[in-house]
Image 1 (cartoon, rainbow, N blue to C red):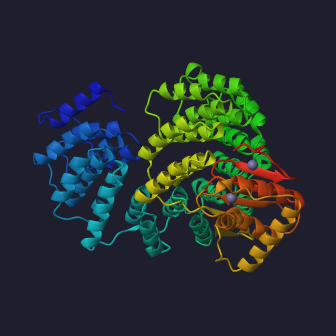
Image 2 (image 1 turned 30 degrees about the horizontal axis):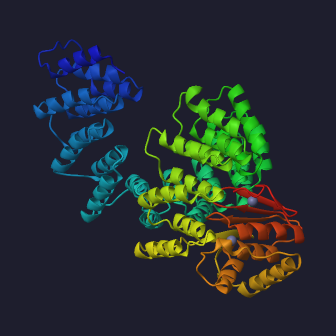
Length: 595
Ligand code: ZN
Ligand code: ZN
């Protein structure tokens, strides 16, 4: 990079028509200097030219782009404006490219708009310029304008447009565009962009399908593709497919790839196979903060909280600097183990020892921990001491600990804040309503119901999914759409009978209180996780663990039900809900009934 002084000198010379011309360098010398990365020398060569032609100006502009020096670029532009070389399409494209690469987005647009003739190169430069400046919407507008002018896009255009759609979350549009691309137009960048776009938008099944298609194409996946597709498996809790991809990644030489290994480690942990994560972690020759975090969080989510804390201490000994995510893992481990003193010590160390500001997630962990010790006052003091306005997570945590402690007054305070921040979330309304019902304040229950009706709050549909033979089956509550519905319901009724004989009674506290007892029982018997469990039991051979994923927290009745089923059926059942993992076996759960 130029020093400021050298830049000024060069710029002055660029504008000075009377500078000494002692050498006779030529365009090919400039081209050769640029191709070897000697951009400053190329510019010096340009300055020394007696009468640089249009091509020399193009090369000078390219050198300025490579140096990311818009100031020098503008001086070359000024020469052109003064008519020192003709403004042909190549010169205009080089100018556009220079401004686009150096962040001069307005100047780039002006040149683009004034171009008498635009070929594909100019359109591509403009689309890429907006993308580079984090303006995906503007980028797409240029792409659509290009289509309007019937300019045929090339592979570069399509790849940029695809990225622009995905940055805005327009997955359907991106998917349509990708489907319309020919085999030749799809390069590694567009395949990976589309797959990771699906993953980022939670469309995991589509990501897996597309990956299979990619394997059938001539393009090979790279570490980004593999880590994205492994994350899709983690999202779906599909450990069987994850294992197959793991084997494939090893076969094509990604054994020691940090990105792929970290994604795999995370996938195994998210599928409840934290032992496999640990094997991978130990095999890793290089570990970064991402791999340490995945392992610490994996332990904490799978009920191996002491292992999480021990590993964190090891991480510090290895001189790896912890980040936000590390502390979420450590603090939630302290929360599960009810380690109040340790939790507070780690929480204070975030700012005092590591010089970081605790995040709302860290505050939430501590508020939750304080709540489990009945220290609501201290929790409230902590909330009031937060440097920024407490967010939704903080108030939701306060609400849930108020429920544990039966403190309605503080729960109302928390709920008021939540209703303001996210009036459409049904969870807090139901929680508060259930608290009123527990102390028979039916008038307040009715007003909450009315509030929900007035604000048109819908209960978010709860669903559970289970993977059988590489296929994901999803169930809603009281779902009767599955082809094997009859068998599933029969199995569920059989289980309920068997458990009833052993003394199990449905806990209907988890249903909104103003429905009749019979309806309550109906709705709780067929919760989505119970349907998925019944389907798992009739589909998976004995001895193979049953893995279920649920999009919201498991209810108390289902938790009890699954615990008992794990005993009577002698199966190990792993349930991942929105909050944590539950490993059920022999009538016990790894969460020790705290979730
Ligand atoms: Zn349930
Ligand atoms: Zn549990």
